[in-house]
Image (cartoon, rainbow, N blue to C red):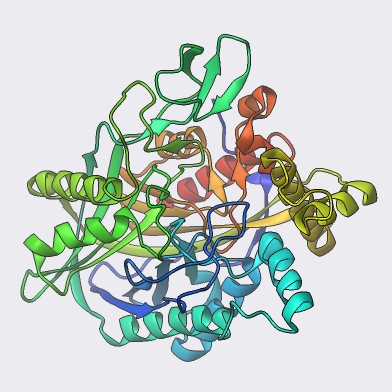
Length: 470
């Protein structure tokens, strides 16, 4: 069992836990802002450069702002593959200046849609540099997209803050079966492989579990009883959409299904859960799973489960409190030779078409180099926790956390309903378990962490939840 240890928490940036007066009402506001890049921008989600041909769904920043007594916080989820720390820091600081919400009480996360743009990071840097060398400028980037992301997050928070009304707090855990599968498999040759193919005869068993719980918080206008918006999370890779156009994937279809019953103005703020080793591919079935149909199928299934569970939701007395702590996670060492080779690989100097794992290794090495240059031998990772009531809490973690780590947090949480949101405030490499590091495989190959880093995040998160519950 993973046990909490307060020793691992190296900084308490939000101070002591405050408790609003029981008579103070909870106020919440929801808003969105557009993030859609121009057609022709690079698409995210792969190691080869790919350009968007248009827009399938608009990409949005969705915000919920919460306030009770003197405590205030905001959670934003963007229809992006990820958001780098420099960019999220800029957005959080600008939003804080605009609204007065403390920086440490603002979360900027991404759904991880592979239908989003590539606009920062080690892959983007290689492609951007190549375009500038060839054309004198990057012909695929007609606007300052980083500024658009920052401005959209700030506008969504400011508008949600303006729209705050007194709300009730309902919560529950729906179940969504048959859409999430652990994508790592032990094979008969002793290897562990990601997505080994449908009906592969070498498959022995999945290398890990799935989490079919769908925790939900629903906010209703206290005066009218009308549903204003929800905050939810589910441990499934938001990577079912793979078309050539920009797309928001199944979270957009989840919102469409909810709006059909709860009203057109309803806003669904959905964050990807601990889904680093889960996706939608059912290798035991021959059923085709097209990126044209899977987002709608999964979004509709989630909306149906949400609405079916709604009558059993509990209502809690709000008690808002927010913490933001940091934990030191040791990084792998990388040599100058590895760094030089990684740069050459992404610049296509080693091969015009690098092997998949050559690109993956380059990704890991260059991110390790960046993080070590910024933080030293250990990266200082931020974890945030929101207590909404004595029954409900939200934890946010950076990067793509394995499902086992999210389950460990939820199982040890003292709150009845605990939402674990990943990809908060930082880039999208994987956070495997110690067990997975020993097994190897694709996800491990992308991670600059040393083994045990994910368990450190779990211990710190559980300690924060326990402190908030007390």
